[in-house]
Amino acid sequence: MNDKDKKVVSIGSKAKKQEPKRPVKNEVEYCSFCNRPNTMVPKLVKGPGVNICSECVLIAVQYLILQDGALSAEAQRIIDMLWGTKR
Image 1 (tube, helix red, strand yellow):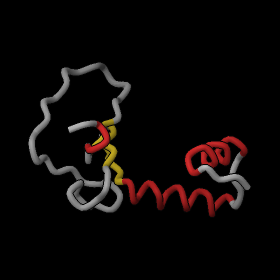
Image 2 (image 1 turned 180 degrees about the horizontal axis):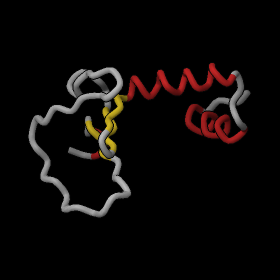
Image 3 (image 1 turned 90 degrees about the vertical axis):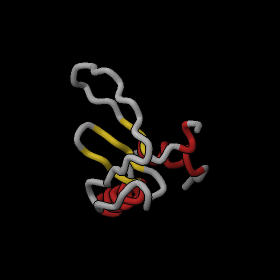
Image 4 (image 1 turned 45 degrees about the vertical axis):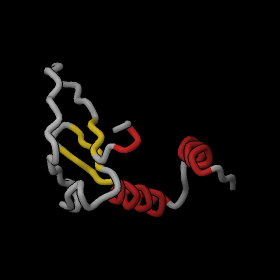
């Protein structure tokens, strides 16, 4: 399985380095926000003590954009780069 096909992506913590865990086949992880398992979402990002699914990430980004009403120049540059759009 290549990296693109992984359903759970781990984000390393700044804590002391530990031996890498052996992957457990069919290990179920849950989104800390919506509580859905990785088997029901497109992707899941696993951080130190918290997980977030790709759908909750999109909701959070939409909220932040709508809440502020305008993007910073840096945020707009990143969105333009990712989506190939220009305003």
